[in-house]
Length: 500
View: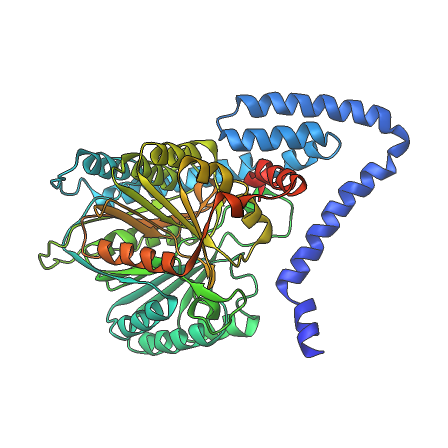
């Protein structure tokens, strides 16, 4: 009974109810004027046509255009209401103003950076792209450690947190009360007592039921500075879509962690909902940590006020390859994460290995993958066998036949849910981070990752992928076959997938 009461009074449940009420009100207004339905329908259809013309002429991804035009013309009495409330122009303009001011300080903090020799021209070109649009400069003087499980990631993170002397900055999409968070919180509280500046930035929607009011009070009483990104308001608006999906931890401008691992018990397999939860991450020791600190402080400034000084230390000379962290945000029209993925796929000469929990992509990135496979490149893709989001997984399956026909080898991680987000190419370059192969990551969320060129951890990334492959089921053309009704269902989902 206590559990039921807690669930019914949770922020997530209250929010869901309020959103349902708003949808119900829109529906009831239409029912109320049903006696004028013919007039209402033709007026609505006229508005839907005008809005469709606006969508066609807007600078936006073609997948979004198709989805909105379908919504407007197939559901003319309902579609215009959704479009007006969900197009997000007002929020975007406000965000652009704030972000553009912050970007200037980001550019200044990175400066011109150093230039390095790349033995492949495409390496230099991709590095220059990241520098020009994410402003993040390539660095050396960094060693790295790749983790092929959330459990390994967690143990290493705890040890490095214990060694913090000056500051700890943590930014996560999900932080949820449980063993993992409680262990980290104990360390953070002790570090505050020792004079360490501890800051946490967490997405308000991702952690909608992560903390009780009592826990939030306890965090602040311990001296931990915590901010919630884009506070979730239960109103039908695009503001709901722009989430901070990044996973960053920076310690003393010396160590940085990123990857797919959030701070919740399922990521270390203490709460198994979908079989074994497979994830990955990376720790960087040295100069790359400075880049991640700039990323963190840029969003910290977005949600608070005032500058935080960064002292860039002298890093010991290390040549373990080139690291170039990158950050991406949805308030501009430059899709950095997607373009990095596409560049890597297009430049592959021998192989491209991709691991992602979700595969809901537009024609551009799908064409890159197909063309790479058709050119004789060994393209392999690993997805979950046990999904956490059934409808999104059906969108991924809608692409199976096309992928396999082109020569892409598709696998499903049989042990459970694969949450690992990585791309590795030709033993030369790899990326690890928070970015999924879906519309949400490419167009709607704040994301981050690290692009690596001939670094010490690329062999470990490849080894992890091959190990996952051994624990996966290969999807053949025969296995991908399904009946007509399922194909229609998946096709409809794929058409509207940009709205998921």
